[in-house]
Image 1 (tube, rainbow, N blue to C red):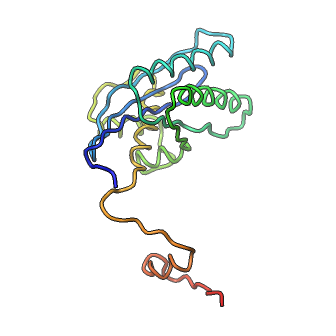
Image 2: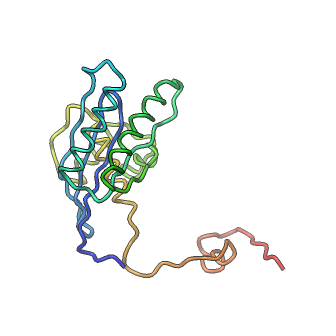
Length: 195
């Protein structure tokens, strides 16, 4: 069982090859506060490998500065342009490698999961996500690039995934044992018991 007063620093990254957004939060028990958010710009670089080098170096610098316990990162989304997907995948991989080079654990979240956890709507706009984060973390500044709040959203999504510490969790040996203990959750489903 986790101690309620335990502190945890979570860094979230929204990978990109033009602009990479990041956000860092401090979680103490049930309280979460903003430490930092910002972007790493690479628009001035033409060489794709120099962009990857900048992502790696800046991610390592951010990790060394904020000392996160975990890095949460947004998964590349599938679009119509496979080249964009490949570039995003490389950017994500480099940020993950930077975290692993500092022995920081990494968790990946789908864009829809992140939006759902912040706003309750998996199809929310970047502006809606930013607005909700301002309310949740009580800050007024609107960043120049919404990539910054996207990175912050990944960190908050990870924070929301923590398992409640009050009480014991139960494990089930199979679907039948789950159904027998949770009849009200699975109304109308018939379970065939193997004999």
